[in-house]
Image (cartoon, rainbow, N blue to C red; front, side, top):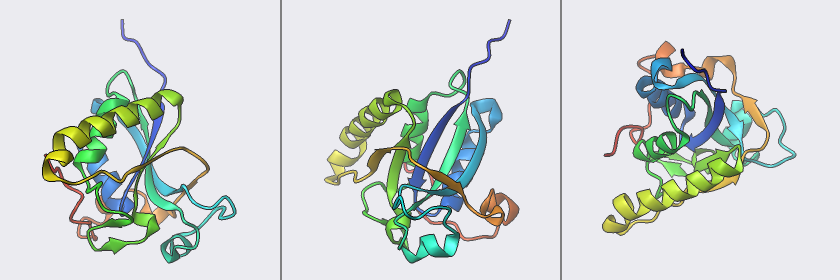
Amino acid sequence: MSTTSTPEIAIFASGCFWGTEHIFVKHFPPAKGVLKTAVGYTGGSEDAKDPDYRTVCSGVTQHAEAVRIEFDPAVVSYFDLVEFFYRTHDPTTVNRQGGDVGTQYRSAIFTTTPEQAATAQRVTEEVQAKHFTPKGTKIVTEIHSAGAWWNAEDYHQLYLFNNPQGYQCPTHRLHW
């Protein structure tokens, strides 16, 4: 008898959302727990409702480019997704990933439950101690409760799968 768990939502920002979505989907196909993704905008000014890409890139909204991941917690844990998030970008730079600079490119985790917040904090501390303290660097990733979410325009969804030669931030790779 198979058991089905209720899907959960994880939201991560780690620079350009094209690469963030691409690496999660590539390493966590549905059989490994990621059921669906969407790229979009979150974490900015409450007055900046339903933003578009151009406005977010201007910096006035303070929103981050992020990926919203629907996952099956019976297949992949939130802990493992947070750890993978840290493996796939540089969480030690403020408002920057590679050549992409601005608040929209910050490193952030937007939690949807108190349990996620506790897990995100625990994983951050463990990853800091194991991978960054020995190098003399500090994780600057923000951890916030998730707020309003807006999907990005359709052409941004699964962008690097639909445009394999498209721009990908060089920090979106496995670092360990």
